[in-house]
Amino acid sequence: MKPVLDIEELTVEYVSDERSVRGADRVSFHIAPGEILGLAGESGSGKSTVAHSIMRLLKDPARITHGVIRFDGEDVLSMSADELRSWRWREVAMVFQSAMNSLNPVMRIGDQLADVFTTHEGLGKREALRRAAELLELVRIPADRVNSYPHQLSGGQRQRVVIAMASALRPRLLILDEPTTALDVVVQQEILAQIQELQAELGFAVLFITHDMSLMLEMSDRIGVMYAGRLVELAPAEALRRRPLHPYTQALMGAFPPISGPRVKLTGLSEGVRFTEIGDLEDTGGGHFVAPTGSSHLEREVLR
Amino acid sequence: MTTAPTTVAAPAVRVRGLNKTFTTGSLLARKRLHVLRDIDLTIDAGEIVALVGESGSGKSTLARCLARLEHPESGSVEVFGEDVLRTQRRGATRRYRSDVQMIFQDPFGSLNPTHRVESVLERSLRLHGGPGQSASELRSRLVELVRTVDLDPAVLSAFPHELSGGQRQRIAIARVLAVEPKVILADEPTSMLDVSVRIGILNLLAKLRDERGIAILYVTHDLASARYLADRTIVMNAGRMVEGGPSLELLDDPRHPYTRLLVSAVPDPERSEPFDAGARAELRKEVETWTSSPQQVPTAVGTAGDVGTADGPTDSEHWVLMPQENR
Image (cartoon, rainbow over all chains, first blue to last red; front, side):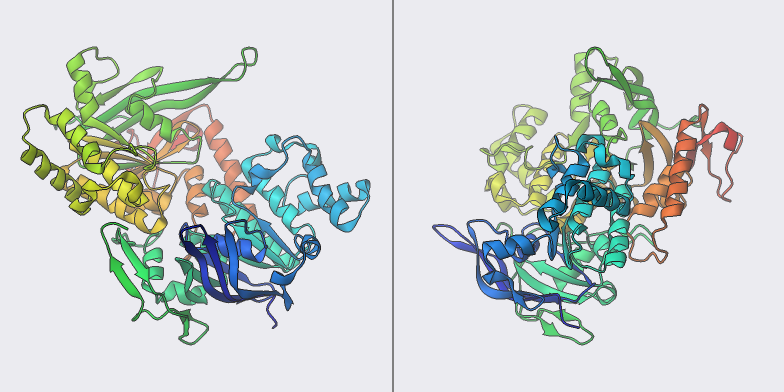
């Protein structure tokens, strides 16, 4: 099947007077229609940089210096501001970390949702409000909540509203950047179940970003692991769970104690260990790709 | 809960009947929020007890009461048999301050950015060890201290901003160790760190328990880490301790509907059954029924899986706070 999103050699540099830092370094992957692709990594690994590049939301001093992003065959990096405006939300929508706090506090929930329809679909006020109520029910919030203000909803409900808003125009790709990080574990699970349900119903593809490997393994079809701007491993979730190949992936997976099974000692990544000069992904069969581990240098330093 | 009569030394920490309320709202619409209700808790020397629950459950407030950063309305906190809330004696207060130390969530905010690591640690060593330590004595104690937290002595000449989050949290722990505490209160000590170094901090806490016999209260929202680290785990909900016991026993066989709700929500790649919204709603209803019951009684969970033995449970066995009518 033709991928909905295809990224080739994406390189993003954060440029300052003295030096430039690569936030993403020759990153390549694709997402098939209806697929959930997880992007894992720690803060600073470049996963949010990739997401913002796809949405063309990077701000100075970040610059895409190399690479291609294609959405449904169309070159995203050459779109004009006007093209972008209608393309965002309609084709690709994004839910940011703590997005629930970005709802307008002095506007009713229904009006905020209706805005999407009046702006993008040219609907009248009454029809837009009707669609807003439908949307709320889709994420299991009673339709009469259209009259509520954001502060009258719980954090979990607000995050559902944001997810409803993002899926309002039935985009083909939904980008979720740490969508549940600020939420308690019970609410987190409900939100994720909600996303899976919506995805089954509407059929969109998902780029799911998190640092929580257990969560990622449960949610995703395929997983890419980022480190220092590089993709170090890309594999089906099941293959990654059974046999992670890159030492960084292994450390990341060893960083999460399990909630069941025997209690075994874990080590995670030692303080001060760094990987440098990470090579391009190599195919190991079965859709499992890994950066060459023999030549990827492992540094052990006390400082820096 | 009643503690079985015992002849051994007093536990490191014994909390009895602790209650705490916060007042919120405006002058006219004042509301009293019961954030801690009838808290009983013991921690033995060389034991790690995890306090788990969601935000607002009261777990951090309890830790802050133990650190004397909050003052409870009623109840007692004893450290090695001495009631630290009532004492007026200066000596006892000073001893409490070095015996009980707290590690905070944010290793970025808790170290002075203008001081090198060695002067941060040296200050604690001097305050604790008193005058009359020679420069070479101090130096060797500094080196020993950073080695204890598994860092290279080269970090001593670094400034906090030159260290990673994990290294900073280790320095924060080293500073606490400089005063040779008997009890450490760790409030979400890894939640702001990069995931790959979190487990290292947990392993360090385990080492301090095993090698120095330090009693540790580990406050966390992460059930899996409590299961990994703590000897016993206590679950808090709306200011109450609702279930407690040896961590594996409790988390592998949770009895309180709230604990079952929490455990079932932890991501588990090994789990096969899908999310069931109906079962979830049932469980929530059950939580409501249990927690609104006027008579809730701590009840031992027997080894055969039965509940409701005649005597109240001891602190060290698996117990659950259940409605009288369910017993």
